[in-house]
Length: 374
Image (cartoon, rainbow, N blue to C red):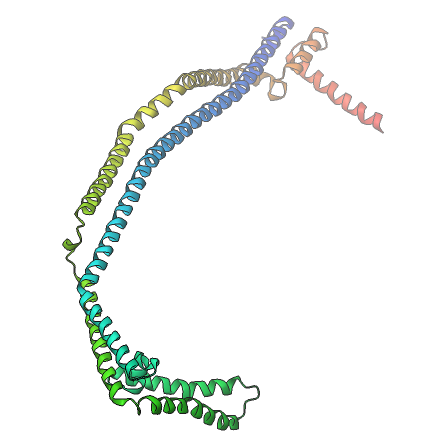
């Protein structure tokens, strides 16, 4: 049975109302989507601020604990270093005093021997340089090291020196060596022979006695070196009265251990107790704002779900009740208004005729537009 004009208009008005409701639901969904994204972003930002605050606070407190105890450890280490330096200084003073005591007799004997040598040579009018160890090394050698010294001096004055002079002369030529060597031999070799003739030959007996005295001095010096070496190698420090320094060092070492243990304990307490308290306090400070944002976010999410469900149901309703009759093209509020106008103006008796009239008018208007352009 065909629909009356009034029934067609009622149908079209209901379709238009449904489409308007659908459009309104679409707008609400878009608004709620945007609001949900903003709330989610605000919630994440606030959570990040809270976590950053927690991490920065924990880091700062941890660094303050480390810094405080490290300062105390540095002070104790500096005091320990000073105490060890004082102990080392006292030990060195003790070693010096022990060396002075244990070598005093030999040093005194050496002073007497040098005085005896000086007096004997002076009485015999022997030149003063004949009292020096170098003279006896060169003219009265007895030890291996003295013969080695003589060989080294010969190589230096009769090989190295002439060659050095030869190489320093610009455009040096081989025959220069024939000049340099004789001069070198005459100068240094002659000096050695002249000194020997004027001292060793003239005062041999006196100088040989002087050599014996020098040997005695050398022997005493070896004994002194041996005593000094033995003292430095001696591990027994009881002779130097270092107990008060050892007690102070032991006390400071114990202080270091105590401070280190307290530092470890403080850090452990921080990690197991204080840390959790700080986290709870910071989370409490942010809780009210986070709860409000979370509540608002959940509320908007629920509203969005509800609107999305209504939107889905409304689309299905329109498709089932109006789309199958009007078609996808005329599921539009403005076009439905035009269809209503066509029926009210008696240009069509039903919706199908109104659609045909609408399409015909639209086609005619398009053709007229093309003609006007031409």
